[in-house]
Every structure is written in C-alpha cells, then in structure tokens.
Image 1 (cartoon, rainbow, N blue to C red):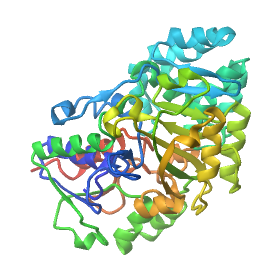
Image 2 (image 1 turned 180 degrees about the vertical axis):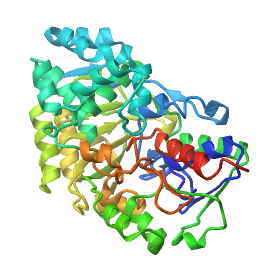
Image 3 (image 1 turned 90 degrees about the vertical axis):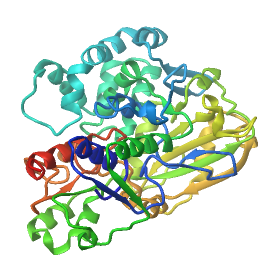
Image 4 (image 1 turned 60 degrees about the horizontal axis):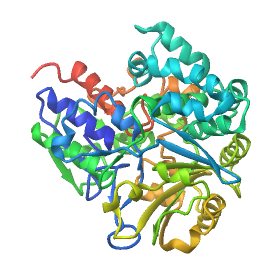
Length: 469
C-alpha cells in the first residue's frame, strides 16, 4: 500500500484482516494524509491540518466496526451539529434531533421533515449504495430512487422548491456547498442531503486531541493485525517497491501515471489524463485569546459553522471559484474545536480552522477576505487573533500531492465523475496492469474521511489477486 491517508489505512486494514501480509508506506513523517494535526501557529495550539469534523468517519461502515477506541480514539459530540449564522444576529442550527431542527425552521419545518425524514429513517438501506460504486441494482430500490429524485437535482432548485424561507434555504445551501460544485449544477444537492441526514443519524463529531488521533488509531489497529507501517518513504516509481502480489495506491490519477509509467496502456493513460479536478481551497488556522464572539450566541453550541449568508450569496461564491474568479464574500467553512476539546489550546486560548473554495491552483492569500467574512458574523473577532498560519491552494498541493491544485475532494464529483471515477470500468479500482489498484478519493464513492474507497479497492484485490495463499 502506498499512501497512509484514511483510504490507504482502510485498504491495509482490510487486507491484513484477511490474513495477508501488508506493508504500508508513507512519504510524510506521520500517517494520516488528510487526517493530521500539528501546532501550526504557536506551541500548545493544536490545529487540524486538513479535515477537522468527521460525520462520514463516525458513520463509515468500515471504521465503525473497528476497535478504534481501544487504540485511543474518542469522539467529541458538540451540543449542536452545525450553526449557520445570518445577518442581524440570528442563526439556524442543525441539531441531532430532526424534530428540533424542523421546529426551529418555523413555516419550513414540515418541508424539512418531509425532505430529511425519509433519508434518516432509510439510512441503513441507503448507506451501502451511496458508499460504493454506482450500480444498476440494489436491495432497496425505492429508498435509493427517492434519494436519487432529489440528490440528482441542483441544490439551488431543490432548496427553492422545498423551502419558502431564507433560513432553511441557507442551511441547505451550506450543506450542499460541501460538494464543491456550483449550486446550480446537477447532483450538487446530493451532498446536502447526505450531510444533513448524517447530522441526524450519526452527528458531526470531532476526534478528541485532533484528527491525527483517528489516523493514529487506524495505524495502531493495522499493526495489531500484523501490518507494517513505514513513514518517510517517498515512492518515485513502482520499481522501488519490494516484490508483492498486489500494489494499492492511495494517490491521484496523475500520480498513478507518474508511478506506473509505461506499464499502463496508452489508452488508459489518456483516459486518466481527462480526469478533472475542481476548485482548491485556501486554508487559514488561527490561535485566539478567547472564543469567537458570535453575534448569534447559539453559534457557540456547534463545532462547525457555515459562513456565507443566504443561499444566493453562497451560490455566487461557489460559482466564482469554478469560473476562476475572486470572490469578496466566499462561503467559509469554520471549525472551533477547542470549545469542546479544551486540550487543543492553552488555558483561555482557542483554535479556529477555516477555509474557502478558490480556483484550482490559486496562489492567492485570502486571509483578509476570510477574516472579513468571520468578522461579519462575529464583530470583534480580529481583536482575539494572536497568531495565524495560512496555506494557499498551491501550497496545499505541495503539502499533499493528492490535493491536485488544492482540490481536497480528489476530483470533481459531478454526475459524470460519479459514474466514471477515475474512468469507466466494471471494477473502477483495478487498472489494466495485473495486481495494480487505485484506492484514493479519486475512486468511488469519492472524497471524505470514510475509508470506503480503500475498503472496496482492497476487497477487489482480495478477490482477484489474493484469493490464494
């Protein structure tokens, strides 16, 4: 296994649990990929370098059955899953309770229950089809069809059709913006439906001590199964790897071509070259000398805060990133983990994690723009900043080559690349080279910390290459 991100770790665990010998190699000094933590600003302030809040991880069919608590993983559940402030000192909350969330939406409460209720009730039947390659058959066709009728629409159209008020529309727009698609694009609604449903089904928790704790627990479990982990080993070619019956790569398609070279047929290389990456992100980490002074105090109930105002504002910001244009008021995803995990900062201090979507490969420093958007909903916020750390989209790619152009989703997740990810093949994880597999977020089901790309790739390898001893 090459690459010790969540998918590489999940793949290695799956193969090791089947009784096969596993060597997992990682270029960085620590495992984790998108699940790493570090003191980025000042000593004692622990920041999540990439992912911070993990609804998909806690709900993951592969992660949740592993004994990760025995390896030090503890989930922290804030009182509310998500806060979305609006101008005028008001905010709408996503609560674990579907009924409480709906009640706070007033006249749109009934519409919210009708939209989310079937997904919440049917989640056990939905999670399998949604977290694997798309198939023309399923054991729960009616449940999946109900999701498809809504999820394959644009987020803007669904929000306008379902809701009459600004609060419910804004809440759904913020959820859907996690798709990193323009909200007018077909299939952008799917992310909003999935993440909203997960808020009620599993919550939006954070690992105590930082995202690194999740990666470390996965690595510890792998070692307990007999797997070997070697960090600080940057692989430049498949020829550098020891003999094995299978190689699984937690890398982007571009890196697959670099590692495999002429082993890959020319036609397959050309198809990989057509794989598209979406907008990148600009990341800002802040050390504060106090909590964020939200104008809407209920924002302090949630570790995750969506900053973007109305549906129309969020849609405009996301569309600008796709067009390669700057945006003065981008949609900002913010996490305030130290409110609920005080060990992340010295006494009285707090950490803030924030990013916004930007054109792919952007080198722009948007510190002032992001801070303006936070200040809009938290007057006096800037006065509490004691230190900053920034990463442009290009710098994020330098940190993790899987983030091509700063694209943390592993590639565009529109309808075309949901079906052909990274190319259209019966087994999308398998390459034309016997024994060589791709297991990154550029394979189904796509981005997010859930490990399912690695799990499915490993299952394919076990069936094809590792069936015998």
